[in-house]
Length: 279
Ligand SMILES: C[S@@+](CC[C@H](N)C(=O)[O-])C[C@H]1O[C@@H](n2cnc3c(N)ncnc32)[C@H](O)[C@@H]1O
Image (cartoon, rainbow, N blue to C red; front, side, top):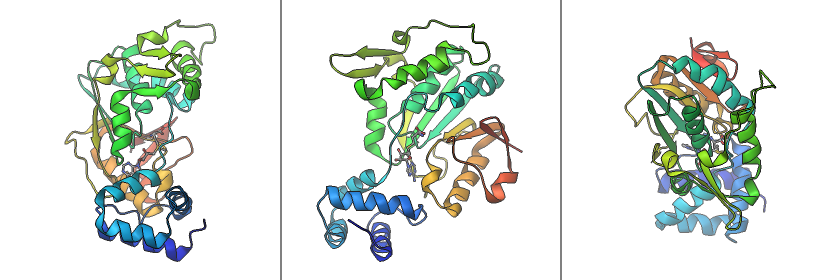
């Protein structure tokens, strides 16, 4: 099903009119593709979809969940996590409290990756971890910490690269059992994060388009990976402003591997390795 420019504008306008969601500053190309998929999956014409949106709030919530992209994995892009382990977290070793915000955390694998690293570096107890997303279904999944095993065997490879191996010293190998942090049940096809990790983060709904910092603390690290790629330039700037205001002066922002800060905020941050520090 093709979505024309006019269809797309009608959908965005209807969403804005009938709900609290504003997708008008999302990048058009990817959202158009998602809208085409939503129409095909729901076997609906755009007119039927918009008509139903007028009076059915739960339906709007369902559409918003379907339209966002939730792909993630444990220790996604291991080289970034190696940098967090060896260059970012050690700077915070003496902080009495370490505040971390995962904005756009999806089903939580990014949050569990951070929790495992905090534990390995012995700073878990001092960390306060907040994890937010627009989509309440992915937040429920994140709280449960349950993932399919067979689809996600690569999680274990990533774990090995970040936790067991040392990229700066190939002779070093820390034989840390997965069971320290997660339980694998191959028969049930499940990887489950251990309760000691699951109980730590505060998972909360938060919309980066419309809301300010709702945690009322400043942060040492803000992770916002593979989220701004879906936003246009103006919305990216709004989000950079939000993050800049809510980072401590020594704090840093970590974006997705292929995301960068362009425009006016590029001079307010300085990139060191994989992290953007406030200038
Ligand atoms: C591709 S996932 C990235 C997950 C994780 N950060 C990672 O890099 O693996 C993008 C997430 O951003 C969330 N998202 C999209 N728009 C958002 C918004 N306006 N506010 C908060 N989260 C949003 C989506 O629901 C989705 O879970």
